[in-house]
Length: 144
Image (tube, rainbow, N blue to C red):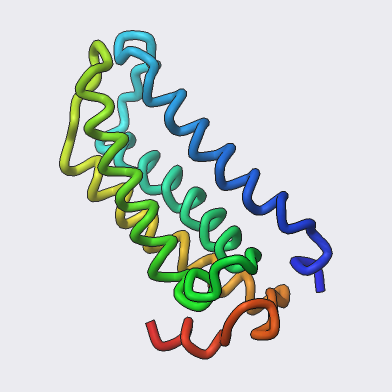
């Protein structure tokens, strides 16, 4: 199907590219960012940004063959990787002028990661993802 026609490296590059974009944007000093007068808008941005990251990381893990366990546990692995990345990104912002390390931002990152892997799981089943012959059984993903 559609997902099988995309080269594997494209999934990896998309996930790495988005992670790099997050790092670059979070390195911009706070006074250079636009002000938005919507309550908790930044939390929605965090949720969306990390949902997309988790979606891309999930697909990347599902379209690699080197690590069968990573393939089989893609939902859990992508979620944990993105939640960890969100935490390290918050810590990284301690050194950026005008930025802070905020537990609620990390909570939004983590909720976004959960949403992203679930969307990835449904998306893959809807469009037809890799089969169990490419590295693992898809049945173990449903038990997570």
